[in-house]
Image 1 (cartoon, one colour):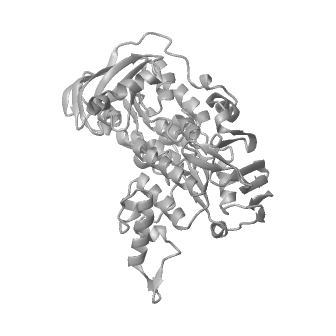
Image 2 (cartoon, rainbow, N blue to C red):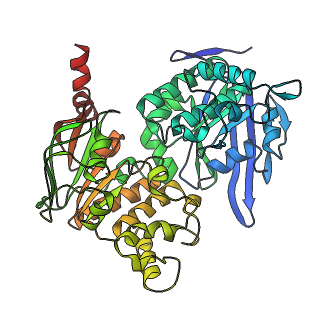
Image 3 (cartoon, one colour):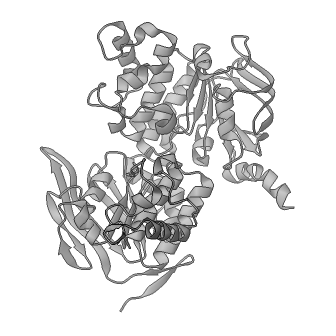
Length: 513
């Protein structure tokens, strides 16, 4: 008999498993990617799967989705062994996977993508009116008002993800895999996704949730399976495991070991100062970045922290106020001018704003140096240009089989290192870094944190804008808090989450009153 337990507002079944993956192994030649992984999932539950990039998570879900065949082991659906040699076969068992890299056809409409291969027909022709009507209905269930006639390529990443989920729901998926679903979502979009996950659980959908964000996992998951180097190292009830233990099991280190020690010397001269700066939604911005320090900028979604990073990097320059750089000049008016004047910047969306995913590591790394020194343009050729570009990639310890391979084939952490290598070329005195570890596993984060501290120790000023409060608290020498386009607080190193959030919500509290 099936028993039911309370999980927040959601009723969770604890009966017979709907999905079992037993003794799953996968080898590519002599390389073992997975070894004896076991997974049990019950109806209406969320199973978190954690591990560093390269641990084998993607291989495991690709086996479940019929993209790869296991070298050994078996899959059972409701206790019956099944075998998939193609994703369509997994689809017949109502298994849907929403990959981190979305798989939509950009020039086709939302409705066409939702019903791709299952288009409703009338008299032998596609019934577009019905297709749009049914697409509208499934999108409404997700709380979305996206026009079904809109081309998917014209949608935001968040809306494209909704279309992927709508497709899974329209197929009546009963096992849904979400791979890093919030990596490109803002706070409000992520909240809407979490509400949807609760709704899907209530209707009996079983979810597998892959993420590096511990706060999300604690809020959503019933159980957690941790994979390290292709091996399953633990499966626990989520309520009974601490974040620090998850991190230790994933990478073999405690959480406090991820952040480098604070600055070893007192901050030096101001390298970038803003007095009463304004730009778009920003107003009254006054701050100074000093040599040798890391300044963290925190704030809720819509606080203006992203706009501050863009203004200081010259992407959307300040329109008012007094701005002074170490070279005596004013505000940079575009990214090229900023790079030329010694400002290195990392955008928050490395894939949408930073990288050409089909281009090589060398081509991506060379972009800034090409803009400043055209003679370095042939990064993939021989000679001085290639040597300098390779030295930049070596300097940030990018792990790649070949620097000529497409950057899109790298893990998120290594893609981010390519971004840092590109901006390192002109030897910046100031770094403006937005969301440095978004979508990056905890192991790769430690390397990026060490890199940022190294920039500061070498005499640069570093500003880190992040939505991850743990990151802000662990990394920063000073913490600035944004709210409603203004800097509302400056806090010392070690300030707590509650204090930061209290300041970040200051304007919301005033509005509520």
